[in-house]
Length: 407
Image (tube, rainbow, N blue to C red; front, side, top):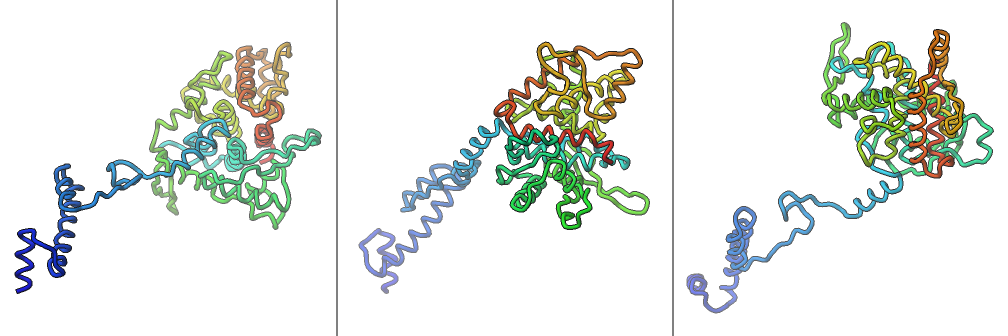
């Protein structure tokens, strides 16, 4: 009978006893659960009813439960990103220079590189050093006596060993940091070791393996390429056709705009988005690396014969002024400087000699464009002619400019 009394007292909201409190707690818990379920699934009235039945208000600060579309985050991450952008001078681009060079070389529908291209593997290793230098992870050692040594033989050091978020860059940076405690190597030595171009068995482990395939898979993750299996007579091979045509077209448009411009002012279409870190130097490194990797002609499909030759000549001029330090000192760029050019590559010298022999001369507009590029890149440098990161990039371009004679 006590249970019946307890039930009758519960219905009339009577006094409290030990037996009735037990039933009250159970009912209150069930009411709370019903009220909270109504508050999450329905309108505010349901939530108010749940609160009226004794439910407590649950606050979900900074979580996805509070607003439905909100995502939890740590404000310290945003502060760290802002500090990193301020330190390096802008935001990181969507694609690295290695990925852009690889994308220029990949055939759109077939999804693979030319089998006859022997330069791109070596050039991609040089692009890794360029990207690390642009991200202010590595630089040349600030030694006053380094000017006595050729620029490609100057010593490289790691100045920031934090990860970049790119797998290949982080692997190379970790390897360079570990070797730095034992022996510091030059720019030329690092490119050779990463490419496997060494007779030293003890250093064969420095080779970065499957760089092209790993970069292609990274582009697949970014939605630029897709993966397909293709049959090559006796075996199947994974290929990576272009999935995002607009991304590749934007790279081609930037390259063509830079190499066909006829004004000293750099056209905005030749540069990456506003706010990207060192976007002028990145444009220069892209065309120079693509030229040395023998994939630059893939961007000239819509140009005529004369326009293609003029674009290659412009690239020769740009490369010739950015393989030296300070930039622009090879051909005497500046006020009152003689209007002549000293190409860095052997192929550039041969083409220049043939043009002069046929009666052709140097275009003044091309000199003005190169002068404009040099001036804009100097503005992006930290400390003008004392930027060891930009000096390292000049050393890498010097190594890549001799690629035809190395391979």
